[in-house]
Image (cartoon, rainbow, N blue to C red; front, side):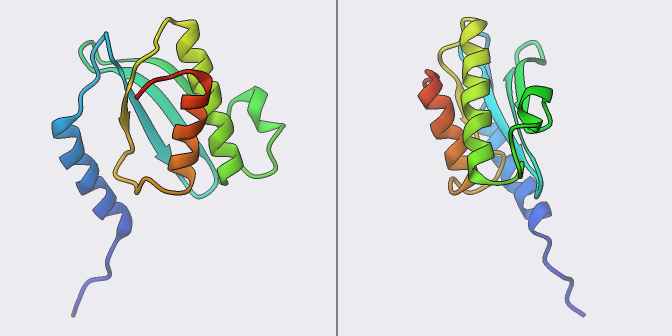
Length: 122
């Protein structure tokens, strides 16, 4: 009997392959994305010290009340802007974009566009 395909397992495999090539440094940290059906999360991570420098998600107190749905493109764009603004406050202007094994389309693209709009360079 054939096993049922699992898209999340496939995404994790893609992300592991991608992480072999991408690493965040103190000069250029990694902007990581995770999305669920109901929310989206973004973190700026310095892999050389293993520390999250900045994070934002649709579950943050300031954002949660403004959004009707945390899992759509509008929410992703807002989170991209927010993580970009928070990164600029910590003098982070250049990042490496880690799409987390997701296709660069829809919510992932909107988050990236929002971060670019805020002033981050990929």
